[in-house]
Image 1 (cartoon, helix red, strand yellow):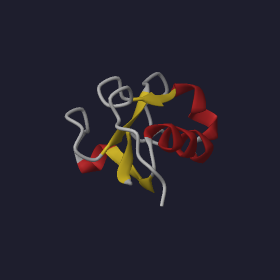
Image 2 (tube, one colour):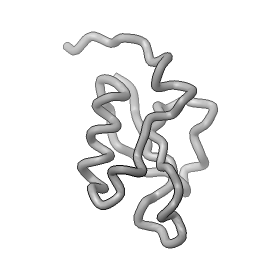
Image 3 (cartoon, rainbow, N blue to C red):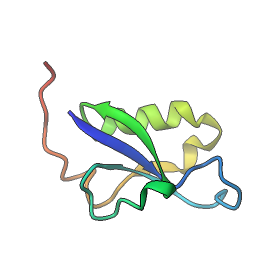
Image 4 (cartoon, rainbow, N blue to C red):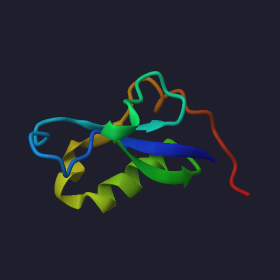
Length: 79
């Protein structure tokens, strides 16, 4: 499992038009800690995106996976 983050807090003002990216820890696109929300340790990016969209359902249409890591996330097995 990896730690996933939501880049750019949807609850902050002036972020209504931004796309909020879900990134794993270690992603080169991960913003500084003040500009991200920890989604927790999750099995894969698809689960992380689902968690982020449920947590911020009013902004779900603005939440997507990081283009750099979502497609290259290695397949991980669940224990």
